[in-house]
Length: 255
Image (cartoon, rainbow, N blue to C red):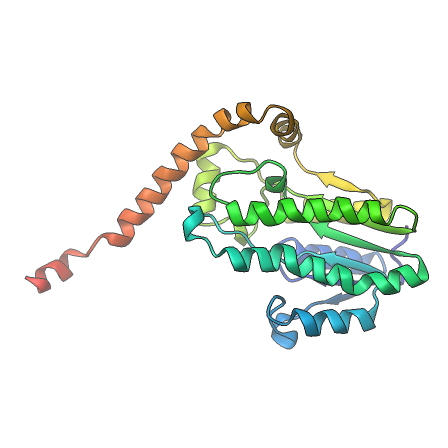
């Protein structure tokens, strides 16, 4: 499918993957509308108004890119926020564009998932749950639309060199040998998937293998991820120790 003249609405279009993706889409002739948080407000908080606007805009292609993760113990995560932006928002925006797509019997919805939604990793419980949900939603919607010309594509990247993988996430990833992809590589693959109308794209040869193992031999993956847990606990403890340390000058002033 040619992107020339296609109207494209994208959330998360200013992020690490989104920015090069928007550039590639425009280079391919797409008429790209990037959701602007400063102008239109928070996606999750204003989802009703944004969905109504999008239903009138009726783009040819919807790209649900916006999202964020949180690396922490489950009890410390902001689960409502994680689920709202990573799962509820793309589902609601998909609902908004479907009537117009069905009326003209054409269109494409691209949902950005994650390999973590297929291979759940410790310390990302809220993010993993949302991304597993977006994969299930994409599968269900694609099957629901099987007798139409509307396409649904799930993109499942592995770790990407963006701001989402900094701080504690980067420390754990570095110590566990996690492989990264450059944002530009991921963006190019997304464009290819849109043009080819692919159903699902999974990144990483080893990650695809572990996805197979997780689906068929989950206990093996459980054992394999014990290293990640040991590394994660050590990283969390070191950060906790730094936060609780009181400078010597303050201790002297207190005595």
